[in-house]
Amino acid sequence: MTRDRGRAAAEAGTGGHAGPEFSVIVPTLDEEAQLEETLRRAKCALGPETEFIIVDGGSRDRTRAIAGRYGKVLIASRGRGVQLAAGAREATGRVLVFLHADTWLPEGSAAALRESVLAGAGAGCFRFALHPRAREVRYRVLEWGVNWRTRRFRTATGDQTIFASRAVYDACGGIPALPLFEDVAFVRAVRRVTRFEPLTEAARTSRRRWEGAFLRTIVRHWVLRATFAAGVNPRRLSRYHERRAPP
Image (cartoon, rainbow, N blue to C red; front, side, top):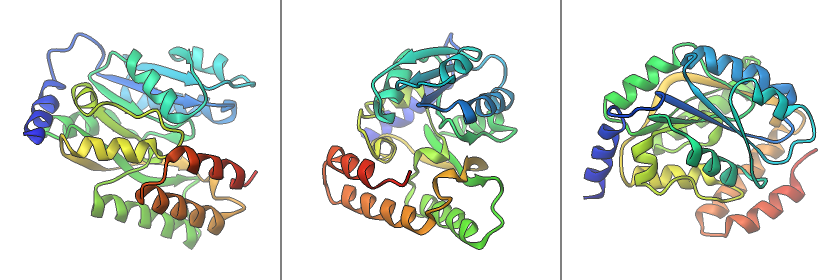
C-alpha cells in the first residue's frame, strides 16, 4: 500500500503544477569560494526558469551576497538537515534538487531528471565524481566505491545531489532536521514510498574534504555511518564529528 501511494505521488509530481519545473535548494556556510561556480553551472544545466533557494547557516563572508544574485536567500540555524528542510518548505518546483555548495551539476541534468521522474522514479541521485577530475588511484577507488554502494544498496549521500518530486518529498515526510546523516535518513524514507533511481550522469563534488587527510576522513565516515546504522542518536555523532574533523 505504501509503495502504491509512492507511485501515485511520483506520477502526480510530473504534471498539473503551476510552479517551475525544478527547485534547487543549497545549504551554505562560508562558501564564497565555491558557490558562484556551483550556482552558475546549475543554472546552465537546469535552465533559466529554475528556482534557486539558498539557505544560509550564518556565513561571515560574501556567501549571501553571491547567493542573492541567483535566487532567494533564507537564514536558518546551522545544520544541513535544518537548512534543507527550510528550503524545501519554501520551494515551489515540481522536482526538488538538493545541491551542495561545492558540487557541480553536469550538462544535460534537466533532461536526465525529467526522464527519470517520467519513467516512474520519484527520487534518485547523480553518480558520484570529484573535481578536479580524479587521476590518482585513491580518488578513483573512492569514486568507484561510492557508486558501487549506491547501485548495490540504493542509497546515497548529499554529495551525489539527491532529488525527489514534490509529491514524493511530501509523501515520505521530507528531510529530517538532523545535524548528521539527514541525507541517509531521507533516502531510507523515500524508498518506503517509491523507487529510488541513481542516474548515469555524474555530479562532481570538490575533493577538498579528502585532501590532506584522505584515509582518516574515510575511516571516520565509515565509523560514524556504521554507528548511525546501529541506532546511535545523530546528535551525539555530530558532536564527535565536530571534535574530530580535520581543520
